[in-house]
Length: 111
Length: 112
Image (cartoon, rainbow over all chains, first blue to last red; front, side, top):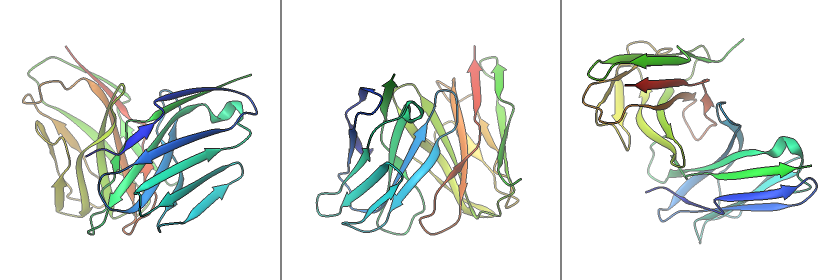
């Protein structure tokens, strides 16, 4: 079952903040976040491996609440280059390498 | 440069024909994956392989077949049994053990 992402789409002005959420009905071992620009391949952003873990890179960070099986991606002071579709991928507990991806959140950052 | 290559970028076929999409990686990754992407559907897993000569069905394997005879290659065949084959197909690879997946540039298949 696919993780559920919300919102489906968000439009920002440059410099504004956004939060993208990802909820799973299955117990997850890890959560991956990727960004895909139109017509291109998805690009890895970060992996969260443990409940409560937070990671960040520049102005993009994420958290993983293992109890709620929820992950959130935080984009701070958004830049035009942040535009794209963001996908979360959940790796279920149990040993398989496979990820199940959500349907994506389309982020548009305008000047 | 290490990476994943997929060819061709665009592929056109007539209905009823099988077609094979190529995926090659020189990252020395053990795991490889095939995804299908349709508008608004995200990335759906077709097949994946964690080791040579072994592969597992993903969520939408019907109408597709794969082989993994070499570590660096994981071709996908879209058979005539796939009812709606027109889509964007992405190949990815990773190391074993919750590591990031590296994606190829994709093949856009159109079947008419």
